[in-house]
Length: 448
Image (tube, rainbow, N blue to C red; front, side, top):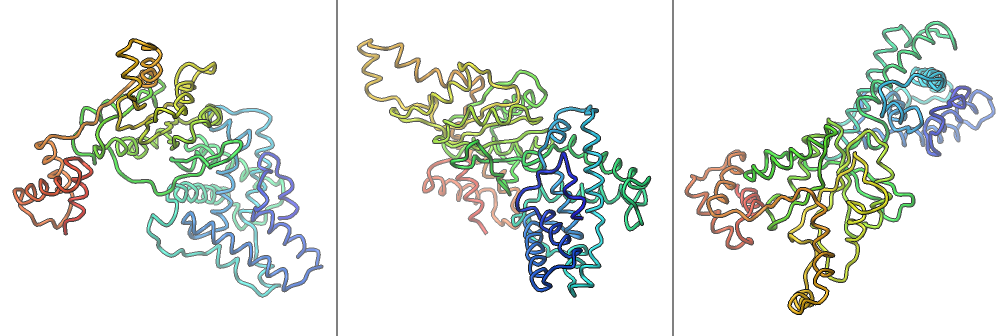
């Protein structure tokens, strides 16, 4: 292993904490015969512990070593993986380097740890390569990453079995070695084209890491599984949101979107549902807070060449009179020197139609006709930059009751007649902020 890992070219950046690099160093010392057994076992156990942590975080199973190698391959952003993500044809001289790297990964994939175990009197490698994980709720690990990595791991193993590679007495650059490298490369290329590479390939929703320079993102794991059809009512609004988003995903003209209206009506839920509706079509979402507006341009620059469609999501967007962050947003949406790329849109929600609170001075300016144009245009021009504005207004009594009945119909074991349910719902709305979808959901959640 230690002779092969330094030979990686395209995939050479494995990181300082790489388990592969650490084990390579350990095996080099083991083969030299100059080592302290107790110290070497300690270092091995340390790497096994790290492997178990990764396996637990991502729900790996059966063969943690295979899954880890697959994880390294799918998270390694390099010129080849990024180009393959964006383009269907990637023929070129660089492929020769990649083929050599795949050969090395195959040797790592099928590495025989038994001699270390026998000499050092340990069995940890046998355990991790025949591992049975404890069943965990999906909230305890990143299911999206787990499913994709384990699929690649299984596909690589299946490809190596097809060419008779696993467990064989293969020699470097032998015929079976060449065939196996080509098989693994084909499998990896297929994965990159289907899912992409790195964080954006494995995850669907992200937030900005505070203070990062250059900007970096942290995945948001275990997002709500809600879908648009789960939101009762607001059919016109949902259809308008679907149409704009699908045009965006199809590469057709699409607009930035502002969902405005009363609290608790489903604005945020509608946008969050888009991830579950369209992630398989390459939709990704980045959540951005108002105080992070200054990073907008840097965020867009970091994603504009990726083969995904990004929605930058801003929830509960509004600005006070003395706040100026909205100018960053105006410049990015329209008006800056650099055009917004075709793979980025901004979706925002707000309880205010105009986003920026009007003050008494604004009204006074209008009455006195002083600076009227400046006052109005400065504050309304932000809203006009959202090509699609969708109102989510508080439902009337009949609509509220339909929402209550729709949500109640999904709950098992609810033993109330329709009349009893509506009586409780109307009393609930009086003491819980009025009639809204949020109030209806809270009511049904409270009923046994």
